[in-house]
Image (cartoon, rainbow, N blue to C red; front, side, top):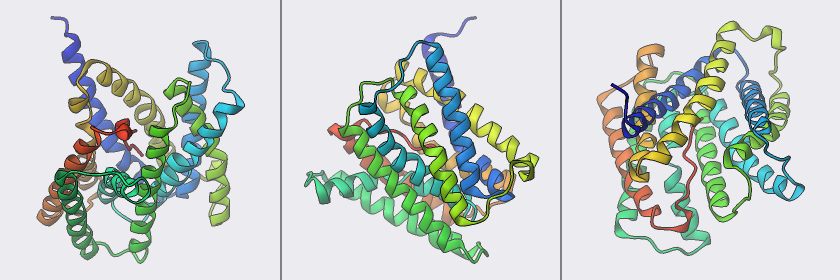
Length: 306
């Protein structure tokens, strides 16, 4: 029996939830034996190249100089800082914690709008903010006891900076409308970001030649580019087209859970009852905040995916 469109959409939603959750673990594998910023630069270049070639073959015009300026700004916040630092952070912290911190960006959006745009929020928004922050504190506290890396705190700071940058970039995207296919634009953002991230990697002083990058890293990069950046986006687009937005956005709350479980199973990352409770509290808080954002102009959020 042939599947209905609705059934296909739910399959696509499931695929998006699982794939984008596992990309955090794939990134962890990729940076284990390779410089994280160099890994991020390579990923953005290959994925951006694929996107640009695909849409050029479909007849998309070259972006104008007027379009390139906001694309570069989005590239800076969403990819150079957000993705670059997030990839760097999982060198030092668990993939599950990194995914959970990244999921906090709606809270960041609300706080930024409250401070700079004087927006008004509901009681549910403030409850969500409180729960989200309380939950992440529980996860952070419990993780700290199970992490022996001297750079653990540095990794958490990198992850928080990445999340903050994603929040800023999200607000910019929502307020700056571009007359360009958003996924073609994403390809250009990736392509623009890759040389800057590579320069950052050179500045960190730990680059290696392409020949020195281990097979394990290349396999992880292949998964991140082909499955995480290409197939998952196709599934995401299909989901957004055929399911209500409230249902299509559910994957954002599933991603951290998938990252934690996958990290536990494949990388032996710690997963305690306190971490699970803190994660549940955080995700519920983010849900409350995200639900309140749906009523505002900035509701057109780009969901976070490493």
